[in-house]
Length: 158
Ligand SMILES: CC(C)(COP(=O)(O)OP(=O)(O)OC[C@H]1O[C@@H](n2cnc3c(N)ncnc32)[C@H](O)[C@@H]1OP(=O)(O)O)[C@@H](O)C(=O)NCCC(=O)NCCS
Image (cartoon, rainbow, N blue to C red; front, side, top):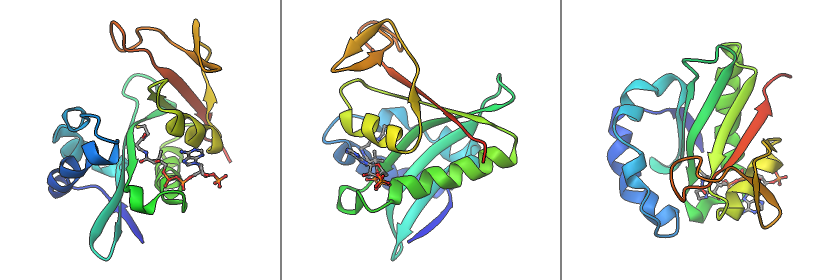
């Protein structure tokens, strides 16, 4: 497996796969080309035998000088639970640390129990919200009406 920086040509194969990778949820609309054109230094793809098997879209916060944010991470279901997601995040943590970004944030749906468990295994903690879903603290309406989210934060210091 090889991990490299993302490039504009990765947009088409990724949007063709993401809905299936998310179990049929319509996700492609959350991945416009702009992420592949303007966030290349902090976003990554994983490839095996030329096939794209995972990706992470991340960026350095424009507003918080010591923070970075992961917008999206996904792994091909055929390649899960073998360290792929962790390797993608490690690439992101490294580039974030290089830019003195000592806190990394991410957000997920309270229904996405796999993502919650994954982020916690990687050392993220849940930022307390005002509600709870299946034992996890949640920020109700964080992304708009009915769009509750679990917020994660992780220190990015050695
Ligand atoms: C979340 C996702 C990226 C994880 O990728 P992955 O390659 O399977 O993750 P890894 O193999 O690197 O796992 C890292 C750790 O998290 C744990 N983990 C991963 N998925 C898990 C799950 N569904 N439930 C419990 N633990 C999980 C692993 O056991 C591992 O723990 P360990 O290192 O202590 O052994 C992948 O499941 C995915 O693409 N899901 C659909 C998209 C999604 O929900 N993305 C996140 C929101 S943007």
